[in-house]
Length: 152
Image 1 (cartoon, one colour):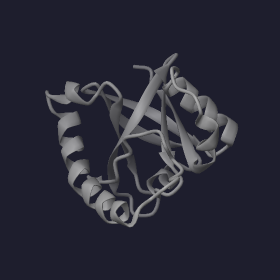
Image 2: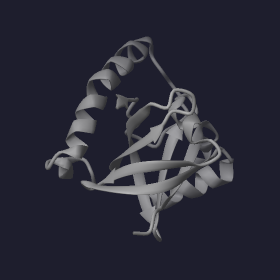
Image 3: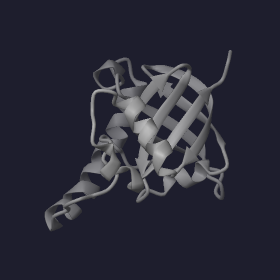
Image 4: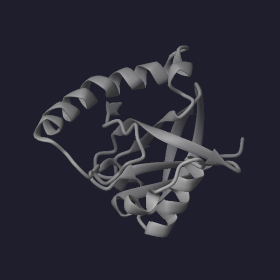
């Protein structure tokens, strides 16, 4: 499985990016992403799995299985995640896609839907982070993922 960029915070629209950040962030992602995938699949997942899950899906064109860590929230049997428009991995979920999640060390199957509708993104951010405010300024740079878990 190929690793993709980690998205450890809910800020989708970059407000200030310094030249140093442009050089350092991709390097950190390359180092951190494989580590997070290993950690979230290991018995030590509890160090990170409270708010971070793995999502695996098939590439639309290549058929390869990709895995990326993302922050998530749960509400009434559904799982929610947010990603930035600047990442491309979410395009594989367009039109709905079967996914496998690793949540708190447990593998679960689901059906993912994506939307870039600002109100849906805002609602998703508020479900994921109920004690935070001020999402209006970043919602337009995000994609919301809604994943319905398979009933076993």
